[in-house]
Length: 84
Image 1 (tube, rainbow, N blue to C red):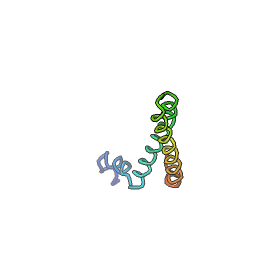
Image 2: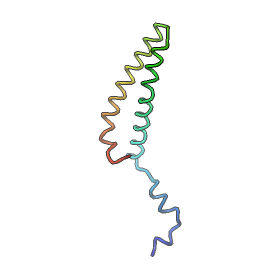
Image 3: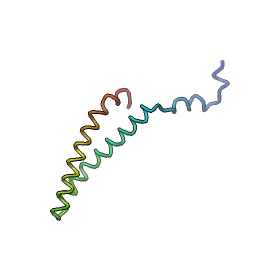
Image 4: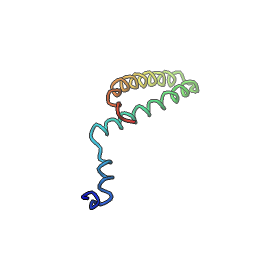
């Protein structure tokens, strides 16, 4: 059998080779994960900060983060199918 003559790592390396789509899915998934973590942290900072200007900047950043998260999730959903 020909496959027995192959180095043991060859089959494993073939499984590890990623397409550009695989890399894109991983990147988008990571970006969504970061935004999912950022939102509660921003909300907490808004509660904690006492400077009005800083509070407004954080609120603006939170709003932008939510918009980005929504756009990214909408765009990402079709790519995500078939990936864990």
